[in-house]
Image 1: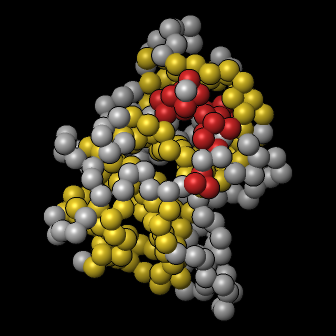
Image 2: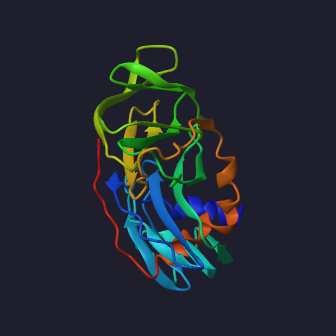
Image 3: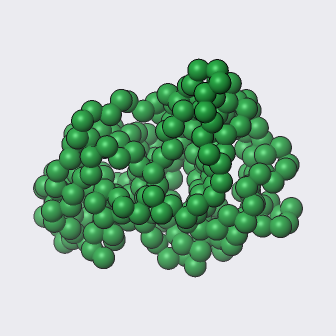
Length: 267
């Protein structure tokens, strides 16, 4: 539990950003972190070195390549310093090789802070098409996701995801309460570029009226004409669970190599 909680607080930091994934090197993992818990700012240390300081809700880190290994993690109140009292700490956290994940600290359906790691789908898509993925990470009931006013993903619940392959182009997306036309988030224009996976996160709290979207774009999935399209459907992230302990908590440890981040906030 300490590792899970460390990871959840660890991931407190980030907003919508787009990025191109670098190629994997042997023995490394590609990891990004999304902060989807409103109202919490923390500092994070790995092996005694500051990794993330004054991290605020609504920030998405740039992806980093993490060498496989182990890290000692410590989370303190913002400004407490490396010697400050640990809010949570975990030692000997392992980084798995060859994983491609986004770790999201967010609220569950009842408003409790939790951590969910997602494995990002980087499989090829046919020429002229793009993948779109939607992840429900908000303290909110089941929702439908609409494109140009038409529901495309229905009855999506926290913390599940839905994905599909569509024609590249721009769509107007919004999130409504399942089975209704009551808009919870949006609308927002999404540009789905050929050969990309555009990942949309709904985060925040419906009760507190601070629901927002974060957007992440992964490129490099072009396929020659006639290529085999990726699958489509919904899931409960079973494939992601294997990195819950071994990978997600290690995110901060790898950031010791790269502290670069983006802090573009989107209402």
